[in-house]
Amino acid sequence: MKNEFNEIEVVSSLDGSREKNLFFFPDAGEGQNIPLVVALHTWSPDRFNQMGIIKFCKERNWALLLPEFRGPNLVSNLRAEEACGSHLACQDIIDATEFVQANYSIDKDATFLVGGSGGGHMTLMTSAYKPEMWRGASSWCPITDVALWHKYYGSGNGYAPHMEACCGGAPGDSPEVDYEYSKRSPMSYLTKLAKVNLSVHHGRFDKSVPCIHTINLAVALNALEPDNFFFEILDGGHDFVPERAFAWFDKILDKANDATALTG
Image (cartoon, rainbow, N blue to C red; front, side):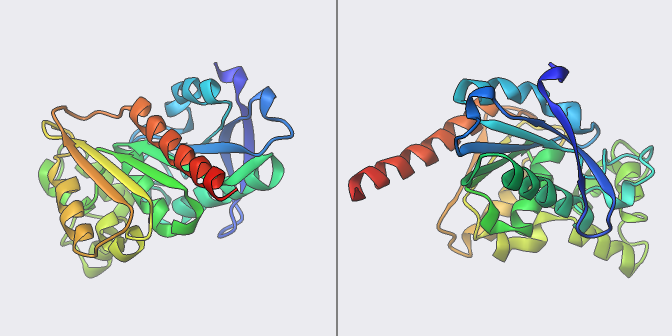
């Protein structure tokens, strides 16, 4: 499967670093403006994590971009503080998306964002970072409040040390550390998320990221009366269902095509 992707390096517009991405562009897409899906890796892996999504893009003759965005959110990542929802990580995704939009026959009005777990967290962070870029953003079992997630695991247990590596310490260590947890949490960007065509999904039996993360986000977002926000709590666990995400993307484009046909 790896040879179906091209590895591209995109220069960060923030710090000039060369950031790696995987990109699939279908042979039949040449000369057309085709939809693009940007799929984001989960908490611990890298850009190779979501390669299986190529199946759904091939079925539709769509392009697929898999950014690295500073790597896994782990103690072992020497750039951990640059990962996990930092401005650098979000901008890497924007830079890579703009690069392929500029260099391939991509429909800018049909560019979608998707991810689950840590990728669901980054789907929310990146769609809030630049709401106007995405025709739709589909987030699955996301972390919406990093400090709350740290509390769930307890300092020194599970994912907590990795959060501390990304944020410079544990919640409460200092105002500076608390700010890092806040700025890497989607709950801090509600007014921007209210502008996104957004769907969020979470299993009520999720033992990795409790569904209260999505419930809290939904309550707070609904208070802002967003026009395009959908969420659901499913009878499942820590699940990402790309078939459902792509079916929603299809529906968005079908509605657009129907509207175009009606207006001539």
